[in-house]
Image (cartoon, rainbow, N blue to C red):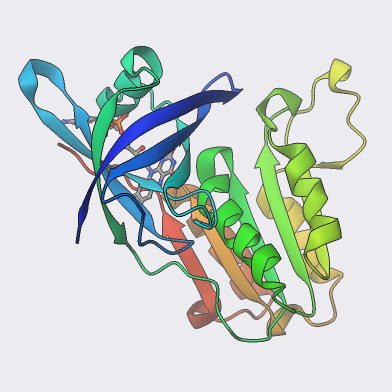
Length: 245
Ligand SMILES: Cc1cc2nc3c(=O)[nH]c(=O)nc-3n(C[C@H](O)[C@H](O)[C@H](O)COP(=O)(O)OP(=O)(O)OC[C@H]3O[C@@H](n4cnc5c(N)ncnc54)[C@H](O)[C@@H]3O)c2cc1C
C-alpha cells in the first residue's frame, strides 16, 4: 500500500459540520486509486503523535494528481478537530491507500444508493464514475437523508446527474424540515422514504444497493432492503466505523 505525500489545496465548507477537502499529490505525483476506495490519513495528534484515520475518496479520480474527500467533524474527535480547526491550505500530509472493496458493480442491474451526512463521499465517487463511463443501468436512485435543509449540500451537482447519468433519479429526504425550509420534497427518515419507494417499484427485488455512512444507518437500511427481497450479497457498503488511535 503506497504512501502519498499530499498538500491540502482547498477546504470548502459544505454544512456547519461537513467540509470538502481537496488534496494534491506531491510524491508520487499521481494517485493510483479507484472510485469507492478509502485512504488512511496520517494526521498530527497531541504530543507529536500521529493519528491514523480513514476517509473515503469522494471523487472519480479522473484528475491524476487530485483527490477530494467529504469529512464530517466528529464530536470530540481528535483528527477531524485538527482538520477543521488547524489544517491550512498548503499543509502537507501523508495518505496511504487505496483500501477497501466498495466498488461499482458491472452487473447491469438497477441500483439504489443510500447515504446521509458525509456518507455522500463514496457515493459521489461511484456516481461520478457512472457519469464518466456512461454506465447503463435500468435505473439508479440516490436517496440522501438529512434532518433539515441546512444539512443538504452539493444539491446542484447531484441534480445535474439526472442529465448526465442515464436513468438517474435523486431523492433528498428531510426528517424534520423547518418551516422556513419551504420543503416540498420527501419527508421522513431515510429508511421510511426508501421503504415507500421500494414498495412502489415492481423490480425492487432485482436491484443492488450501495450504502455509505454510520453502522446504525447501514443496519437500518439493510433491514428495509431485505424486506423488499434484496439479498445481502447484492448490498455493498462503506461502513464509517471509528477506529481508535
Ligand atoms: C472505511 C471508512 C471510511 C470512512 N470514510 C469517511 C468519510 O468519507 N467521511 C467521514 O466523515 N468519515 C469517514 N469515516 C469515519 C471516520 O474515519 C471517523 O469518524 C474518524 O474516527 C474520525 O476521526 P476523529 O479523530 O475526528 O475522531 P476519533 O478521535 O476517532 O473519535 C471518534 C469518536 O470516538 C470517541 N473516542 C475517541 N477515542 C476514544 C476512546 N479512547 N474511548 C472512548 N471513546 C473514544 C470520540 O469522543 C469520538 O466521539 C470512515 C471510516 C471508515 C472506517
